[in-house]
Image (cartoon, rainbow over all chains, first blue to last red; front, side, top):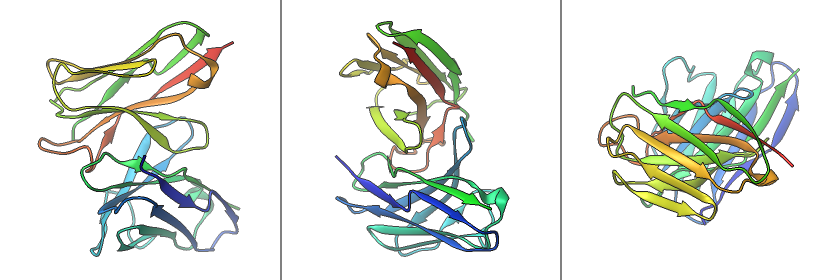
Length: 114
Length: 115
């Protein structure tokens, strides 16, 4: 089945650091990738949608300068949390879709900002 | 946008029991998806439903797309400890949306199975 790899699985860093998270589709071409944020025991909150080769579409209330998304190829999208602060600590999950199949999710990245 | 109301919010059951959870919307959905999320991992697609009235099984899991297109349910038969996790329903938030586009998620059902 479709496999989406997300890296790193866990990041702990100091306040003010920028953190990059990668999302790769391993066995299919992902025309669209999605980035979600999830708080403990809550649902997934869509942050942005990115289509290969074009600018990401951000959901209302998500700062595009804070959460930089790049989708340069059909198999890779990256999310960079710039100048991260403790309130950015969360579980970030990517998903990818392509070829008419439903979204398949990565295993998430636990981001902890000290 | 369209909202999905998922219930129950949580369930505590004994191993071997059957489980039922459902998802409702005030608007019509043309696709229903059911995902399971294990702790610390991303959601995994369990069942996808594309037609009103459709009943689909995946092992011990059965899901149905309601006739009104405003609801769906997921049943798990003979639960086992590894069924523990959060179950989410999801669907495209606008008319004409697809399962591979933007999705709206239900609030999730947290399932705990006691051995």
